[in-house]
Image 1: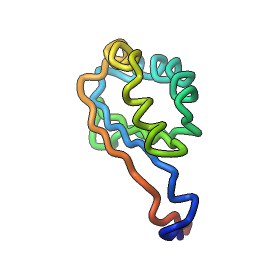
Image 2: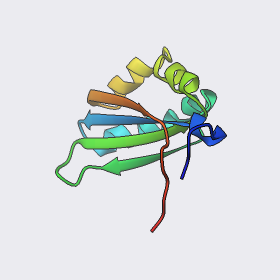
Image 3: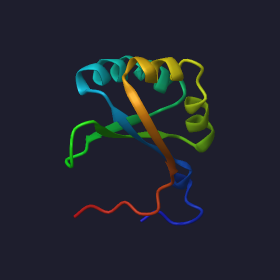
Length: 103
């Protein structure tokens, strides 16, 4: 469990939910943009496909802090990349860890 005051609590996970045209267009552009995520301090990502239907993807990107995640979101190359990836909609949330427990 991660408690208040722990240094680990500074980590931020950026959750991006995308409405995409198709994965064949989205995936290569997403992979190509990894260098930009790394440049802004991203330490890793997880990508999920919505089981309820095609065209919905959720991406979780880990950053050392909120400032790095915000800088990534403000990157001037992001809007054109989203367009090239066929993204028709985006929802964003910045998450901080509260608990991480394995079963």
